[in-house]
Amino acid sequence: MRIAIDFDDRVGIAHEILAELARRSLNVTAVEVDPPYIHIEAPALDQAGLIKLRSQLLQIAGVRTVDVVAMLPGAQRRLYLDALLASQADPVFAVDASGRVIIANGAAVTASGMSEGDLRASSMQQLIGDPGLLDALVDGGYHLPVREIEINGEPYMLETLPLHETSGRVAGAVMTLHAPTRMGERLSALQNYDAGGFEAILGNSPEIDLLKQRAARMALVDAPLLITGETGTGKELLAHACHAGSTRSAEPFFALNCAALPENLAESELFGYSPGAFTGALRGGKPGLLELADGGTVFLDEIGEMSPYLQAKLLRFLNDGSFRRVGGDREVKVNVRIISATHRALEDMVASGHFRQDLLFRLNVLTLHVPPLRERPGDILPLAQFFLARACAQAARPLMRLSSAACAALLASPWPGNVRQLQNVIFRAVTMSERLVIGADDLELAQASNPAGQGMTGEITTLEQAVADFEKNLLQRLYGDFPSSRRLAKRLGASHSAIAARLRRYGIC
Image 1 (cartoon, one colour):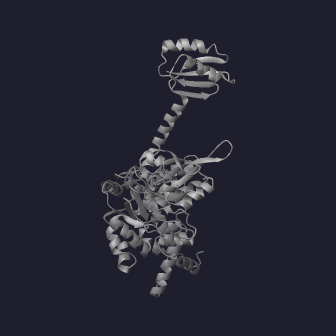
Image 2 (tube, rainbow, N blue to C red; image 1 turned 90 degrees about the horizontal axis):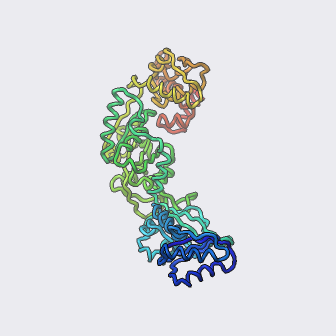
Image 3 (cartoon, rainbow, N blue to C red; image 1 turned 90 degrees about the vertical axis):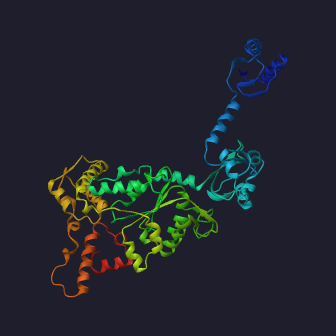
């Protein structure tokens, strides 16, 4: 039986209480004193004995109550602490000031490859194998930035939380190890919490229905998938849906735009880097998207913009699932499905020598083509209505509607920017219009509705002049939707300097 005695704290009262138990020859197996309570565990004490014991204890000056409890507070804390540690999927160690392991959860035992007894008899130096790091931890009072370490040959990001005595002296630390796959799950959940499946792909035209049917079948096939289509058609949305419809749906999903980063940054983002790989790198190294997404999917947008060097490195990964970090010498092997997308004709790039044919064969196992908006006019008005309602909510405006003239203008536009352009046009109209009915003039579609060749007037004198006229008209038409040389260069798949020079030549900006 376990009892809790409530008492007025005074010198000698605990001794008097224990003396009464000794006088009765009760075998006491545990005592916890935490004023104003003293908790006692006496296995031989029964109900009849408790009645007599309570009567005697209440005669001791200062004893207020004697009650039965289910568990001693210390045992209860240990039970809950063990349950708390066992529930943690990340390895957790509690170490003393010298780095000796005091407590470790089940995940830490598994990560160390040691028995629980051997682990508790070891030190972090034996586990990490880096005496310099342990010295830095101890000397710095366990205050160090998050950094990467290796335990039992596996990489982890190390996070430390110092433990202090009441005097302020460091008594040790709680050390948590984050595996790249666990970090990937959390990051993916944060980035893709609102990403839907095929229901998020708007449109009910026959073209979109057929696309969804093909995509749903291909999602279940665990092979590389190439998505083609013009800019703004929703290729990344389709990639999300294919991931959600696959057997990897519970695993991470990460996206990398190959056109948005220089070669060296794209390489480190995709493959990660080892400690000291380059100036400005984190001291402990960093896992790349492939490691973070282990078991899941990586989406490579604008794959046609990938440099030849990265194409070769990606090809090796697709061959055997292994790679090396930037500046590293250790082979990393992961299980990741690659979904790629491009608005460019990769076959033409292969013919011109700008894209590897063997990489195209690896990426193009399964193929989906997203039709442009102009080829599915039945989706234009439903999409416009959806974007209109969302834009009104975002701008805190009353629900607006489209006039018949606006609907006709939307249907007549060629939509070179596709769904993204339609969304921007609707949002701009909602923001700028003072009326509740949006007219054709509010849509600002003059540039978008002009065909590419409409700006070429007069007699064609030379081929060079004709090409220049076409180029000028094209840049004027697209500049309204991509109003900077960098954005326009990205849209056209050209270099920033070339587009900037042409914009100056034609006086567009």
